[in-house]
Image (cartoon, rainbow, N blue to C red):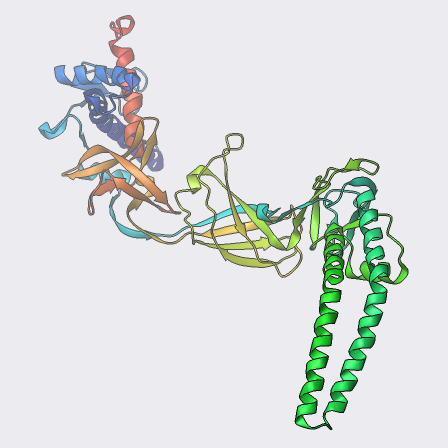
Length: 464
């Protein structure tokens, strides 16, 4: 047989022998109730426990499924079966692997030690409207919706742009009333202008008079101004009231100036956008009758967009309010911010979390635009071990803790955050505890051997 083949054969035999050795110990541990929460584990482990208590188990180094309770040879390869027992009288919940075998198979140990874990979370986000910046565009007067200048959702609207027009009898009556009061007040205004011109002339001429005469003229002018004020005040109050009401229903200062100049009422009242926005919903149609405060359009303030970031539940343990966030948009714009608005509720449909936060763009945001998001989680001070040391099973998370002199103890741990290479241990280990870095195979081998032992001790297989 070639040398290379022999060496390969020997390494494989040594490896399978180790599997058999450590599997027995792990099976004892399973059978003794360390995974009592799983009846299946107890059922598998109990044959090993009983067999170990009674006598050694003989296993083929090359074929670990060949197991029997007496010496013999393997029916497949002809090798002598090797006895497996709990070495050195150690606890049945421990696994023993001698130093030479550890070196042959490259079993490595690592210590649980304090570490600073940092992690960048890569995800995506979408520009969405700020819910607090939704504009309900409603008329302040009832009437007929005669014109709608918005044709589609997502349409951009400039500040002051006319969104729709309402033909309203109430608005016409207010305009007629305003024109009428202007007409009725014109004679009084003309008289007041003439009287004030005379008063100004008297004051100018009084500068040349003696002090006593000048004081008398000033008193006369003051009395005249008071009379004018009492005469004009009721008219001015009514005019301002009507002017304010017309402004409230949608007439601008320019329209009021035109109404004053031409005395012709506007047949329809325009409703304008109070600020730049994007149409989110269209509820009105031309020809419909509307009342004051009827919702015709919903718009969102485009200058106050937010980014909605998607996170998965397993990422939530990493992120905290205040973490740095980098966003890269399709056009290359890069924005940095601090994480805020963390909502721990999970969407049942998508199994994701949504985090909304303000975003300050140097341009008008395009709602619905995607961005690549990176959350720079703040570093955490934890007790950590290499990720490869942790065995994740349906019954919990375990490590193989080195007890010294080649003995290993399966130990349940509570894990926490993790980065590329290390994982935090929240409970189960202390600083300095040694664990097998590549100990995953120990539990797997034990489960395989336990299954073989169960078949061996079954009545149907007792003859073997």
